[in-house]
Length: 379
Image (cartoon, rainbow, N blue to C red; front, side, top):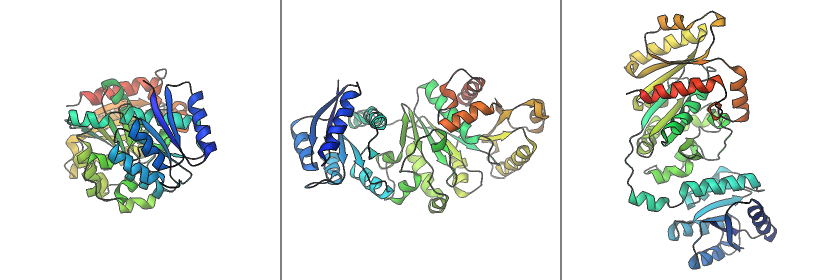
């Protein structure tokens, strides 16, 4: 069945341009109406069912935010995608709080428009019916990735193993970037959002999944992301108790939660350790990293978290003088993976935003496949 769409914008040329984009896409879209203001949108919705409204904010008679608020209350099965020239996060927050499901910055790019429509429809279609009929019963396993030294590939490992876990198990996975000062997950996946964990806590207290969901980035079927703040200064405004509260809520809606932490033992990271089923400590086979690993394990021991710790060694290459045998003798904790060194594949992945595991034609994919299976087999 075609996705039924209303285009709402007070500029005729913009309505016509978007209509042409949708028609030329070759996809199953049906533009049921074009409207000059929000009141016209409400009038259309009174007489026919609509899946998505592409909504401008600044319109006469009734603006897009007021119309979105009415739609969310009166026609909850209709999804609103806001289109606006306003890039400030304040506008984005207002749109999401009014009930919008997504936000596109003008001028509208056709590829982004099509991707946003498809992603939004795939994610939210019939969610009200589903949520009422099937209560959430999940109790997510939580995997925390940590390293005592930057630059060891921790975030790359967390992201790629999380994607594989979702793919192989057909389960819902949430990846949280808790490196609140210097989180890189948005860059690694080349996905950006004005809504991050900072904006989530800037608003009213979080009490339910529905209040968190607008701040999650839907990466693909079965995988959502919660990004770190865009600037390091924001980290000081996020408390460990706030983070704990949302993780406790999200556990019921996902099968697995992957947490990528910073390299410091701050309260947010320590809380993540407490909530985690396992802590995967990542190191390279280079002496300074191994030294930091030793120190990290001592801290884990003092925190009574050592039983949760599993080791992952990245950039495995014996040509530099340290062998697998050396590290196996040096560390008593269980080693669950050795990821081989392949600088070209990793750099290409990070620079393009295409995950390593999206291609099966490299040695790293096989290593991540093995690692993900080991992780899934952990009891």
